[in-house]
Amino acid sequence: MISLLSLGFAIPGLGNFGSLPLVVLMVVAIYFLLVVPNQRKQKQWNAMLAALKAGDKVTTNGGIKGTIISVKDDTLVLRTQPDGVKLEFVKSAIAAVTTDDAKS
Image (cartoon, helix red, strand yellow):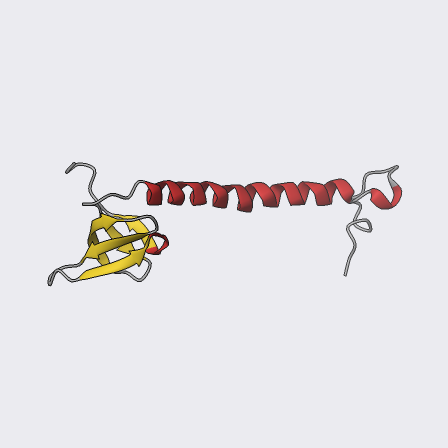
């Protein structure tokens, strides 16, 4: 394997620590490209779960679509169509709210 030092990427005068700024730069870039967007997405998902209310139309992680009948602490009851079957789910099983904002 070719070392970065042998390719001339080292900063002169730093000796064995010549590639350290490059490694630090790569770690910072990975943090801002991978970690920060995931944190934003997690915050949006938590806000969506906190805002769930009766009457919202939702889709679960399993693909079941329904209308929320009641919301408890960490669970909710969905009514599915066409038979009106009631199913109980934990809030973390909700993938998306599909209620149209134009209708409300």
